[in-house]
Length: 263
Ligand SMILES: NC(=O)c1ccc[n+]([C@@H]2O[C@H](COP(=O)([O-])OP(=O)(O)OC[C@H]3O[C@@H](n4cnc5c(N)ncnc54)[C@H](O)[C@@H]3O)[C@@H](O)[C@H]2O)c1
Image 1 (cartoon, rainbow, N blue to C red):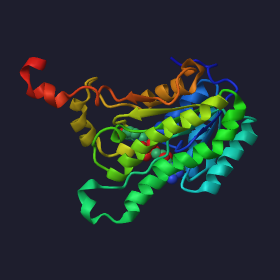
Image 2: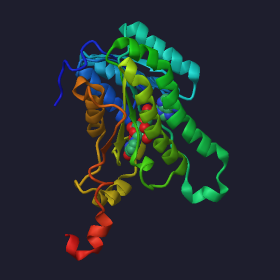
Image 3: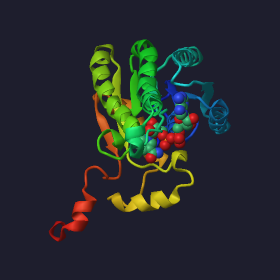
């Protein structure tokens, strides 16, 4: 349930906030009182997302930030601190997925390098730039958006390796930042009906039976988990990965279907 005061007075920066899960996170944290900098490499769409929030009386601004660009990341963090007086929450949602494991043997380096650079190194750049400000806030929290691709085989080798790397970065940074009062956690989504799946309803229908809870996720399912981990409700949680996948990775639906006595 939304608590309109949970992030009151918090400065929030969301990467990849223009669309999909990032936009849902921006909305959720703004609805809960946060002042949100919606950053994205697509500035016009980030502006649209932020202005839709402002029309509802919520506090949001847009800022151009490609997480592949260290200077742009540092400018976005500086802008959030200047605009909101503090930076309390960083949400790393931007990612890139082009690596195709069916092309593995002929893969050009570029797809692997780009997936790693945006999905893993991009989050690292944001954490590095934000950490001093999150430490100064006294209630700083980082939540990154991982993927079930980081814990099981779902193809897309470069993207998946990057998502697995986010788990490691989360734990290492949790240890480094804990003495300064900053918590660092990861949300691990299964399939989520975001703009990334636009025009692919047939595939979403095909994967639905793999989900024990009977549906794929919505961006709001992930935003709720991000909000929890970023909030004081998670004050004693750091370095953890919260799987939000409708039971996909916990329940072996194929085995259950094949073996009668498990039903
Ligand atoms: N949708 C899913 O099924 C799913 C599943 C697991 C994890 N995720 C993760 O959730 C996060 C959000 O994904 P989504 O489904 O909402 O995707 P999306 O495509 O709907 O939105 C991604 C947003 O990130 C922005 N972006 C892309 N590259 C960027 C860059 N270099 N710098 C800044 N912004 C950039 C895009 O412009 C877009 O606004 C990603 O980390 C993704 O890996 C998604």
